[in-house]
Amino acid sequence: MAAAASKDKIPPHDDELERATLGGLLQDAEAVSAVIDQRLRPEDFYANANRRIFEAILSLDGKGLRADIQTVVQELRALGRIDESGGPANVASLTTVIPSSANIDYYVKAVQSYSLRRALLRVASEIGAKIYDESLEARVILEEIQQKIFDLSDNRNILSFRPIGEVLKETITIIDNVRKSKNPITGIPSGFESLDRLTSGFQPSDFIVIGARPSVGKTALALNMASHMAFGRNNISVAFFSLEMSNIALVQRLISSEGMIKGNDLRSGFLSGGDYGKILQVCAKMYEAAFYIVDMPNMKLMDLRSQARKLRAQQGIQIIFVDYLGLISHENVMMPRYEQISDISRSLKGLARELKVPIVVLCQLNREAQWETPTLANLRDSGSIEQDADLVLFLHKKQNKKNKKKDEEEEPVHSDTIPTDLIIAKQRNGPVGTIEMALQTKFAKFTPLFKEH
Image (cartoon, rainbow, N blue to C red):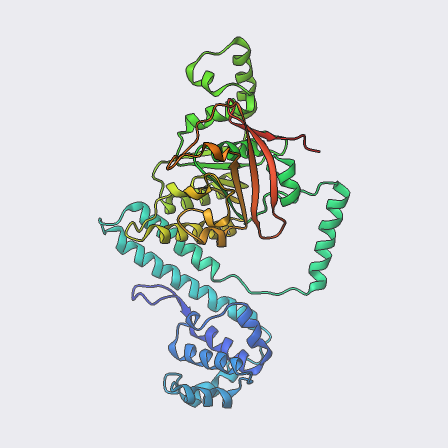
């Protein structure tokens, strides 16, 4: 008999549907694997007796034994839960609830639906109590709501498998389409052909790290990539989280690199008539682009996740850039910094998988990478970054070691064009290597050092 939330606060449940599910499992041993794949769990049963009986069925399945009335009763006795299950008579009565297991999928879905409603009630109750706790920030509560709702959804995804023959058909179709299109880029093009040839573009769900020492060009490279995606012929929807630069400064950088206008001239206002014409052309191209800037200094991790989910849901963003990792604030300020960075790194990797978009995060390298070619060990504050990342790119400015000075943070730059190596230090699904680039400092723009073919 179905029950719903009412005046006496009985949580939503249906005891008959729960018993029908158990009866179907006792009649058809093959159905046990099916309901496990559907992620039916003991906690989905409201009645304690039904929950204990299902636990016994799962225990038998784990031992490779068939579940029937006798084996379930014996397993309940072995587990010391025969009384909690309502006794042998209750177990035996389950097989009379339904004539067959034909509709067990329907029963399972119904039981899970009631379980989800009860879970939502618990979340609502917990959040309702926290709303009145003035020691908690409203944004913290909002993030907790989002995370709890996502967890409920994620934990109920149906497990499945596919035969290799079925996957092969899709794989051959993809290979054939790439062959016909003559375009090996299967992800989002970065705008640099040599890089895209090695990576096939930035892939959905990938966590991508761009590391460099200060003032080597991390932001310039990220903006060059983002502008190629958003303002080029591909019309990719881009979100750029800027924790270091204001949105005005960011757009000025974009105008400078896109229009090949000196950044100093833009900031000082000393522009020629030709320059102003270029600005108008660039702005016309940029105006309608799907390029979203999130300018929030001291951004907390929960803020970033919340905004990213909103942009994905409302604007359909296809890639996220974060400038940069070291400026993201963790909610737990008492945690050691390396643990904070590890947690942030794992969270961003999880967010990329959740949203099914590449997330490109800029990261500073430690001082040892100033003069030597950087390695994964130079990623600052945490070894977790190199583990979580699917693709790690380093920018390394070519230097003259004779000019090295003790404790010098940066060597003064006088050249308008700086040879810079773009190093693929890690690629989970592809080769590593080095691409020679040149940074045109006047325009904050990277170009290939040699002509790309």
